[in-house]
Structures are given as structure tokens and as C-alpha cells.
Amino acid sequence: MYSIYLCINKFFVMLDYIIVGSGLGGIAFSEYALNNNKSIMVINNQSQNSSRIAGGLYNPVVLKRFSEVWQASGQLDLLSEFYASLEEKLAVKLDYSMPLLRKFYSAEEQNNWFTASDKVNLSKFLSTNLIATKWKSIPSPFNYGEVLKSGYVDTSLLVDSYKNYLLSKECYFEDTFVYSNLIIENDFVVYKNLKAKHIIFAEGFGMLSNPFFKDLPLDGTKGELLLIKAPNLNLDVIVKSAVFVIPLGNDLYKVGATYNWEDKTNIPTDAAREELVTNLKQLINCDFEIIEHHAGVRPTVKDRRPMLGAHPIYQNMFVLNGLGTRGVMLAPAMAKMLYNHIEKQEDLDVYVDIKRFKSFYSNFSQNG
Image 1 (cartoon, rainbow, N blue to C red):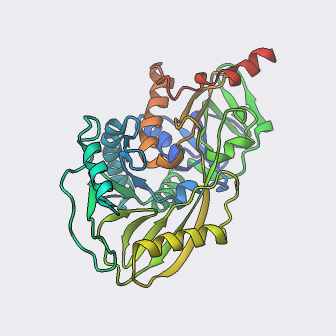
Image 2 (image 1 turned 45 degrees about the horizontal axis):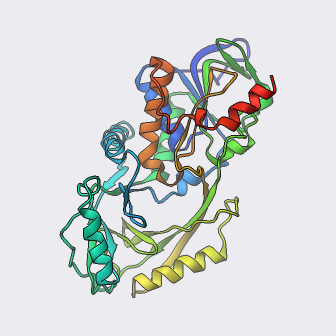
């Protein structure tokens, strides 16, 4: 379709978009572009793995504070449509809608749940019927509260399958992006043998190496999770306590996740493993085997909002980042918003527009 990287040493091919990064954000933007008949080239170096190893959980409620996730209803509607379309295109199962049960440890926690479920914005997400189902491997004398419209996306399968799809369309290659090789003109950019109207940086935590956007306040949060095998657990729902447990089938479960604001590496640690195992043993009483242990750095922002928008000087250069811990929910909505901003001149939501970071813009006004 786009035989650009096969033999282009002698000429440039004008693309609509160069997209740097192929995590959840890069995938979502690529999909909107391709579905609108735009030509793209995705460049990715596999250095960031937070999308691949993520729990993939989607949940419209912040259970720790009993508050609605920002714009949850709209994001969930788009999520269902977006991943269903990808499932059909890629011929894989990605979206697993299933109940999320919050285990209660006291009557007080039950009462707090009912109080929260009375709130107008939470009543559509928090069931008022306590779940009394008993799983023999999870003691639960105070039962569970059920979060509605929850589930998980198989992000590892998504990343791999979408990469293969892009390869089949000849619009993907693996390489480390060399920023000094980027030539920026008013109406286009040139990178090596590629020429495009726009360039999108969707690099996750790797953005901190990007000289154009590194001064944005990205604050990566390391997360670690386990893949376990527990033949006697027999769960068919997601259970949330100090950890979440997601059933994957074949007696396999994802268990996560930790939060570390200091360590910015993708290296699994003994401390996180011990924390996850300790919390898991407080939740379940059956034997389990640790199959895999993964770590990645989530691209988080202190104000808990994504970062979208054009560079202050280079108006054909854009950032799509800061999806944080809710990437599977945010990616389709944020990619669609940025695409419509570029192609239809629709305004970005002020809560995600990078113009909210005044210090970032002042750096450029001071320098020129």
C-alpha cells in the first residue's frame, strides 16, 4: 500500500503523518488516520513497554476515592466501538467485558459503597446489589461491590497484532528516532527518506528524550505486575483489593500493580514482587505459581490529564502523551480528539491541551 521504506533512497514520498511510537496512543492515532484514508509511517524502537505489559483494565470509577473517572461515559462508549473495530480488522479477541468486584473488609466499607452509589455521577457505574457469590479461594464474609461497564483489553496482543498489520501495509519500521535528523519546514517535515505534512510524537515515557517536548511535565510512574498460574482459584470476574486479579483463561491471572515514582527503569524488582505476593496472599488462600514478572514506566502527569497539542513554534509537530494508568480508555478518545483538531480545526479540550502548561510556552517566548 505504502511502499515507502522498501526503496526510496532516490526520492521522497509525501505522507500525511509520521507517527513516532506504537503504544496505545500511537496505535489509536494510526487507526483514525488510516480509517480516514490518510497515509502514514510509524516509527518505533520498542524501548517503551508500558502498553505491552499493562494490565489493560478499564474501570469508570476511582475506587480509592469513589470518584468518576474523567469523562468516563464518553470514553467507554468510544472504547467499545474502537476495540470491536480492531478485533474485526485484526481477527483477534481484544476486549473482555467482565464485572469488576471490589472486596469489602468491613460493614463500614459496605456503607461507603452505598453512599457513593447514591451519587448521580456514580449510580450508573456502582451496583447497589452486593455480590454474595463465594469463591472458595477468596474468603469474603462482607461480600463484594460490583463495578459496571468494566473489563480489560489484551494490550500485549493488540501491540503485536497491530504491528504486524502495519507491516503488512508497509507503513511501519523499527528504528530509534534521531531528532537531529528531522528537518522542519512550514508545510511539511522531512525525516531521512520520509516527507510528511505532520509528525505525531506518541512516545510515552520516552518523550523525556525528545528535545521538542521534553520540558513538558511528564512524571513517569513505574508499575510492576505478575502473571500467575492458580489452578484452584477458578475466577471468572476481576477482583480488586490491594491488588487486582484479572482472569485470562487456562488458570492464568494478571496480578498488579505497584506504583513507584522514583525508579524510572523497566527492570522488575524483588521489592515489587514481594509487595504483590504479600497483597495477593492476603486476598486468596490457594497455591499459585509466578510465571512472569514485568515492569514498565507509565507516562503520567501530575494533574492526571493527557497532553495533546502542537509545538509552540512548529505547528506541524504534535504530541500525544500522558495517558497514564488508563491508557485503554483514554487512547481512542484522545487520538480522535487530536486527529479532529489537526484535520478539522476542532478545539482541544482545555484540560488536555498542552497550552495549560504556561511555563512550557514561556520557555519558547523567552528564547525567541
